[in-house]
Image 1: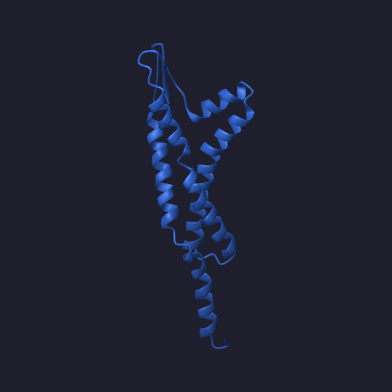
Image 2: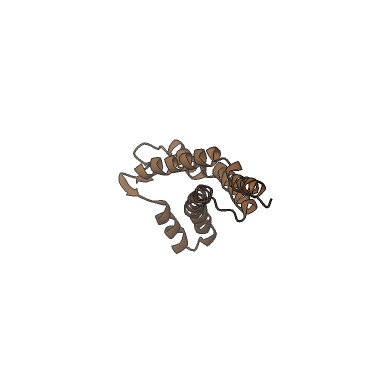
Length: 147
């Protein structure tokens, strides 16, 4: 986000905002911003990667846990756009000509793109694939000479 006050511009990132609030003793706000803007998107990406990896490699253990992980990931996806909406609201509300203005920085577009792509990825992931491995294993046992 690029903030311009009385003709003086400054750039800020999510992490610089977290550091600013932390240094000024606003620990709860710093933690909320850090968790919502950094930890949650990162965990969401890692969860999607893990789910795709386990489905691709036919991992048979804990399909119930992986289904639960998928549901959590899909639920979190709905709240991932909060940061983008906050920047958009600030840009729309704080336009005071030469006194003060706020513009989204180039990273805002990249952040929004990652959020949207992970939302689509979570929505398009078929959780039935998690259970297909167990079904295939049961069919193999039924077809075996002793089963």
